[in-house]
Image 1 (cartoon, one colour):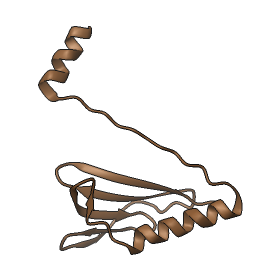
Image 2 (cartoon, one colour):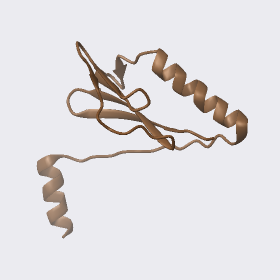
Image 3 (cartoon, helix red, strand yellow):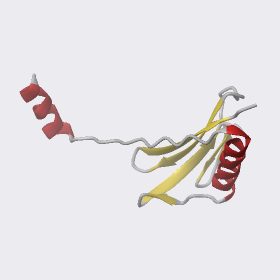
Image 4 (cartoon, helix red, strand yellow):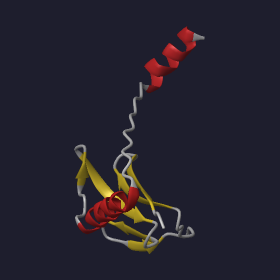
Length: 102
């Protein structure tokens, strides 16, 4: 089985991902998160990790903004879990989750 996996990896490539979670607690933490999300929305990212951003999808506003287009996202808005997604070429995405605490 191991040799079979190596064969697949050699043919299609290896992949590595990482995740770093930060917990901000209480009212001060919620305020910091809200400020961070507002900053991400106001300061448009054009490049992430050297890769050009081709579109931004924001489920808080239900809007997808491309290089020359603005379209509505046909998904329900959520009060519990919202995402901002930066689509990048070729086939990369940067996702920033937001937890809305009430």
